[in-house]
Amino acid sequence: MTFSFPAWVRRPSTTGLLLAALLLQTVLVFRALGALLTEPGQHLLSPGYDGLKNYFTFQAYLQQPAAAGFAWFEMMNHPYGDYIFYTDNTPLLAVLVRLWSQYVHDITPYGIDIYHGLLLVGFLASTALLVLILRRLLHYWGLGLIFSIGLPWLSPQVGRLLMGHFNLSYSWVVLLAIWGLLRIYDRQQAGQPLGKTVAGLVVAFTLISFLHLYYLPLLGLLTGSFFAAWLLPTGRWRKQPRLTLAGAVLTGLPIVLSMLIIRVIDRYYSLRLNDPTGFNYPAWKLQVSALLQRYSYQTTHFIIEPTTYITQESQAYLGAFALFGLVGLGVAWLFFRPATTQWWKAWGQTAERKFMTLLGIAALIGLLGSVGTVYDLFDGQYHITNYLSPFFYLHKLTDKASHFRTVARFCWPFFWFVNLFVLVGLDYWLRTGRHAVRWWLAAGLIVLAYVDTRDTLKFYSRSLVPNTLTNLANQTEVNPLVLAVRPEDYQAILPVPYYHVGSENIDLTLDDDDPHSRHTYQLALRTNLPLMANKMSRTPPEHARLLRTIFDPAGPAPELRQQLAANGKPVLVFFDQSYYDGSNDLAGRQTNPHAKQLVEAGAPFPTNQHLTLVAESGKLRLYRWDVR
Image 1: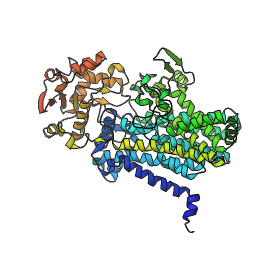
Image 2: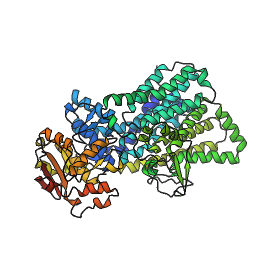
Image 3: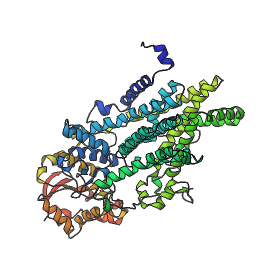
């Protein structure tokens, strides 16, 4: 068989198109974020807060002793530790890297660089899935090539890279579900078996839940809503029991399997809070105006732009291509209604439009859930009880629904639906329309997508920050302390002021101050000693309560004191004097009286517990605490 370039250009093979898209996407990845790979150890995506903590839990998990096993994380919440599911360190990837390090070749020193590589591969995975989806939905392969490269950069999940929610940046997760639903739809229409496809997706969804547990309900809601829209209105669920079974299995079995795995492994499960606070917290719900709010670095203004502040969790801009495409459809309907109506009806008869309709209903249900069960209007003067939210009913069935309280994330499939809808509609118009103006309008929409993508690439190429976590050159304050201590002589590090985040009980929560927690992460990684502080999620409240007693006038609770003393080694206390000499009024910034009291209790701690000074660097001090 000979290769014909003109024939390939007319209708390239799926493999050829896939390779071309991946090559071009690789160029864009290196254009925007290549320094993460070409300059190892020099850069981070997020310099603090959740981002630095997630970097820390990934690297610390790789460094912890092999005796800890693969499901256990001992580098925080000492002496109790916790399970890897609650670390936000992308558990599935962390386990795979640690397995490689333990049984093939030790790559632990390059953990952060490898993590960056695994995050960037997500762009390629999104592109690959878009090629497969658009190859099926579009006639013009050029459109598929362009948008399979550009849309991954416009997804609202990309912003998670700089927020530090790294494992939520994988837009390919939603695309995998869309591709899977499209494949099931096509195979069902063709009368082909569904078993292998459903089984493969069940395995994939179950594994994906261990990238981040939020993917579990997100995929379940999307697939469940799709099958409900497909089967319920026509009564097909009675006529086609195998399809109904496939939908039930794909929707429910990954949830059952994932929770079963966690329940079998997690011996702390019964200690965790069943009904965490924060459900319907405004900052964690979608602000509908966010769909029209361009990101600060984008230069294309939509016709209508909100002026109110959009929270991080609400970032959900649909993009100039989709929004102006919808405007174009609206203008056509207003001024060319007969022709537009005829075109709409003809398009509605196609298999592509029928699939998009089902996907749209599923995405809309996610959007309705993402605004919360109560939506405020006019600065809280009125509120709407959202009976259309699936969480309104789920929350009545079980308090455990509150664990997925950051409901804004359930709008992500809506971004993909709207963009795919406009793109598939544009492709159909180009294929069936007769007016030459359609090509000019299509070119204009493509330019809008190009400008948004270009702006995004520019912004991300300038957003990398110095690596303060593992690059010793950026740890000038901590370096003298590390040189003055023998880590093997100690059992753990106790930060003062103390912090403990993740119990989901507001009275037991003391948020960390970013410079302070950064120093503690640096010290923990340098010494490979676990922290007695905590910044994970769903930590048993009882652990937080006991650890707080360290700062009681009488000292630690007897059971905690006994456990620390039984270790046989002293505790290394990391004390930052700047929080107690007026330089940093952390206590004064606390709105929770319990948190304020805990910060203030750190000031006399070295004296009350008769600590021995070990090292000093500026306002940072290390003490030895012999627990008896």
